[in-house]
Image (tube, rainbow over the protein chains, first blue to last red):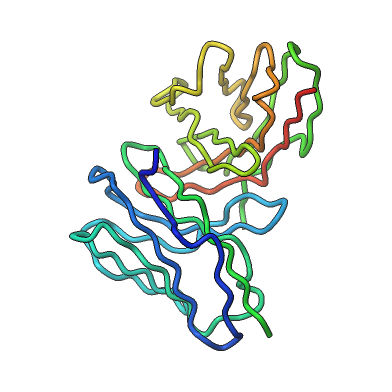
Length: 110
Length: 113
């Protein structure tokens, strides 16, 4: 079951540069998408979300883009900071259930 | 800032034993969830709970699992007879009315020996 797919298991970026995390989905019933980040030994922490009727949502350094025709999302972090180093999950919401992608481990190097 | 809490942080049990994982959702939230993450795998939905009853459950959530809100603050997940393959991180989440954003607890690591 690969309803939400994050094809890059890891990403390494220099501090101050842009981080772009990508996500593809197959379930057309998703009405809402979320990004969570997760540090080791902690639960997922909500980062930013986007409704399926929008194509962009911005919150400070974080911007999420949705291309519904391509069934593709991306999360942009700019500028990246070392504290952003974590696993990022792309998540689709349909019918009160969240479906997680496999995650991308982001490493921001000082 | 209000947060979801879970106890214990780590539970070790013998195969066949019953375990109860506990969660205290954020106080004004009305929807409650359990997810699990087996080591090296994706986070998977188990069950959602609203108005004192299950609203959705996945095929993972079989008769060995049950959920309960025994009082106004706790939300529990019971596994009646644990199996080795139940070893995982179990996350509780909650959300309030009018938003789709679920807030997660820190998780309970369940180890079945």
